[in-house]
Image (tube, rainbow, N blue to C red):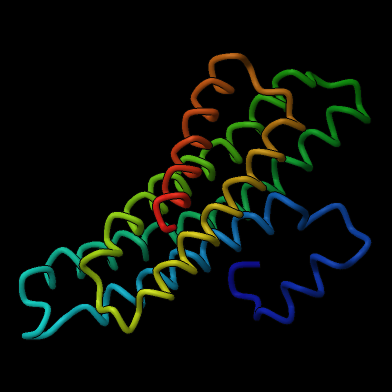
Length: 180
């Protein structure tokens, strides 16, 4: 699905098929949030922004990496869901399949928290003409992170993974509230 167009992604998501599903949708939203933030960071350049241009360029590069990672997580989510379904049908090790499936939305939630925080911190120094794009990035990442949280809970995470995920969810809330 990583090479699919947006209309193709929407059609695939809306189809009556098990995948892609909510986990992939969350990952796609995270990738969009990263891309919006990266664009704003790239516009924070030139002589006018010389004091922060290098930091902005580094942020753009990191957001690009995170967008790619989010798309990879979308692919991994489909494979993990397939493994859970197979374990359910064939009497396989459900605990193992669910643990593996839970790790993917946990990883996505961590990515969203990290990049939403980075964008919220960047907002005061970004090109003011792109401030709304930074905000869009934060809000998309926050929504994607909350969607990842919901997916995580379906997969019955262990107490340790749940505790870490709760801290990431709190970081998302803080990043989004910091925009107000």
